[in-house]
Length: 345
Image 1 (cartoon, rainbow, N blue to C red):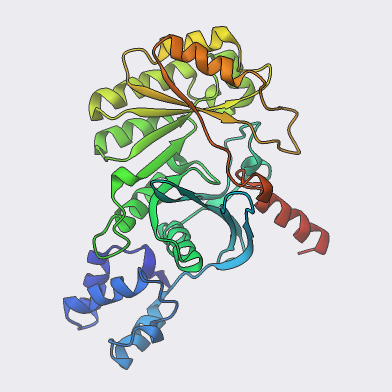
Image 2 (cartoon, helix red, strand yellow):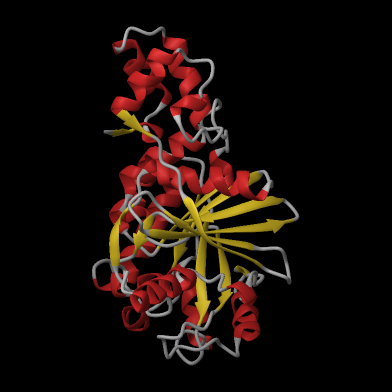
């Protein structure tokens, strides 16, 4: 059977026309799917024979809330969704003055191996389909009652390691007959998959590229981010400069502050030098404690920020949200896996 929610409106139109139905039926189906219809039977303006025919050939993805945690501090909501095959992924809903932002996952697990991230502890299981990324936005909005205005692809997984499905998701979520969330309201985070960055540059999408940098030198970066062994930091910065030259869009550099590892003054100086000539924003992130990691939060974040600013670099410290609900990436999924292991599931 075929995953109909991963299909574009044009593909659904072609599919219903092949069943002898008019094109507008395909548009109706697309609209139902993007409003959260869970079955074809809910699509009341379709004929019974068409609903039966669709159910024989297609299925509709519907995630189940396996866990839901709400922060008592700031209202951040963390969802652990169980997918059709029993795998689990995480989604975080955060409220800011500019609207509600949802942080979604792009893979079940992650193979990138970053030492400070809980998402990668159990490795990668599989890629998410476009429908499963769309469901995170759609069902988070439906469950919370909060309208989603911004999306960050910064949850479990490496988006550019699942590029085809991610691009299809972006097409779907941007569609005017769907959720209609504009590309300028989407941020895509990568740990440094250089071919993917170059491919994005060629597409000229108006999204925000966010690079998980975390160190400006190869020696440090290779210690904490194995991806640097495939695409070292020099290649990464070169790709970022090409991206800016091609798109004219500012890049956001994510930088988790790790005590005694990447928080030295010389590293701030080097970072400023590497991004010179390219409007970039450095987002300093207070490190979340991950049980399996010996890496600890930096005590020099303010000094590092000041050093960057002394070079004319725009640097901010990310506001920590959801600290009381395991909101850092991969923590909730890891706990679920541990509990399933104890139950023998």
